Image (cartoon, rainbow, N blue to C red; front, side):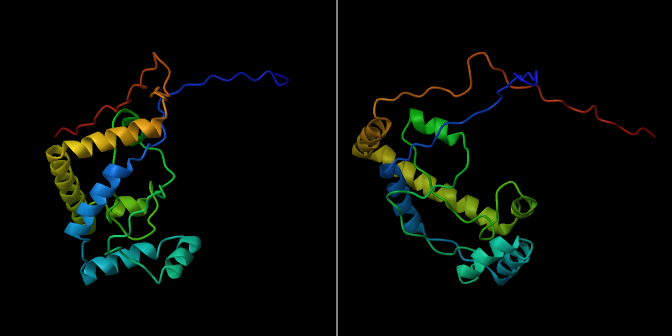
Length: 192
């Protein structure tokens, strides 16, 4: 007020906190263990090392502290209190409505940061492809088990209700907010 500054706020996105479901998460983890982690070729490991060579010194130090880990080729233990990645995701909104389980699979070199050119550079590699297929197998086999076991569904729903503790989902985006229009450049076509 002292400077006469005015602020206009335009909200165009927001996402709710993730409500983890241990029933579904542990079920998916069991399927992940049964299927097993991927293995990688020397070429894939070499490529991942070349990506890691471009990381910051801080990230390289973390890698050294993990015995030079390049690609994760094992299924880690399931944590009852998951150590979630601090990031926003629209899965959080979904998890307020229905019980939601998640797994994490290797699709890139260890310690690759999100929203970086390094992540983009690995997006079409055989490493990413293997991870995508592995995640699909785990999700599909887990879904089949859930569809065949109504007790699992009841248990997941009961846990979900308990996790919410009477709270209900409310979108963080105010009513009436519409996404900003996408601006598209007119294509320039060369004619001969």
